[in-house]
Picture 1 (spheres, helix red, strand yellow):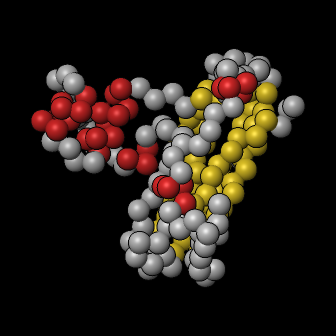
Picture 2 (picture 1 turned 90 degrees about the vertical axis):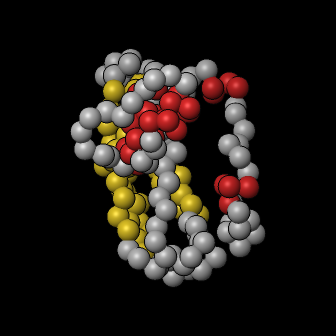
Length: 167
């Protein structure tokens, strides 16, 4: 995708296409549970009534410090940056190996260039390689996004792919 040709970017395309042959063996998965979503809604300051309407039970917010919605262990990551202000957002994630034992995956980040070329966006992943010794083993990483110079209603897109480097 190119922002000059497709200004709505991924927001105009949906989730994309599944490859049925690959869906059965994803390699890595992000486990996300109901309580993770409850915490995310609490981090977004949803009151008890709104939270219970969404969740469908009598869930309540956990006691303790409020976190950030960026902490939801979900493959999608988004940051709403204030126009012209610098930003630095960390997205902690944990993946579980459901592929092969003794496997390794390398982080590959691809950034879609915006229409303007002077947008400053840097993305890093730490660690950039995840090595697994067994099935169902979990590993954590942090994707960090920092930059500045976005204008109002401007978006910049990127994607992170964990590529199997043992194949």
